Length: 234
Image (cartoon, rainbow, N blue to C red; front, side):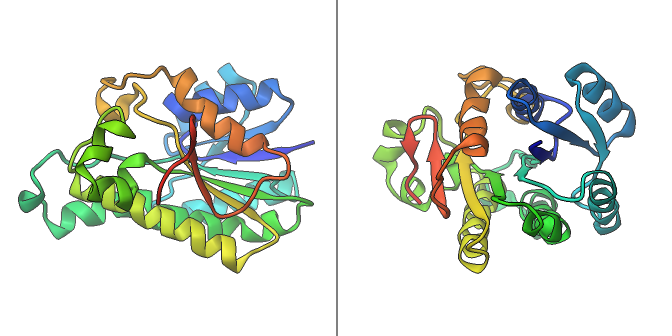
């Protein structure tokens, strides 16, 4: 039995990823910070509800303890929960704006990985999938031509882009620190979700494909950054 934990699984990419992995036989803990929405989504999916707010240390610790008591280990941890933050020009963004986004997109992943690390290490071939974005690629952001050649849409989002760049670095450091755990950063692409007001050019089904592929890959190489069409430049 493959035990999979997904944060932010009550809607969008997280929900679709959970649905597909359950179809493939995974036992999925569908994480959500709102208990009612979480239970409703889990019931619709056939998943186990997991109350987890990645911005709250105690909530994350309690979620890990719930999974430990019920399952004893975690085979796949998918850090999907993320926010876009306030839409504003780079010069108008404040430190508080960045702290708000980082608390979910970066520090939330640190809290979650740290809490679930003993459960991952108790598994045979564990993996961590961090849902990143091509907007976090330094190579893409540094090359104006790559904005359209590599990404279907690009925006100079100070908080969001830099948070995903930081998430990519977390992925690399975790991969090197824990060679027994496969760690991957994944770009689902410009997907129509609440994050972008449903302006994305892909369906959630298309966007979830890269996440599911990373979560189910056999003989996967750790420390990679991939999307639906292959490797994404760091």
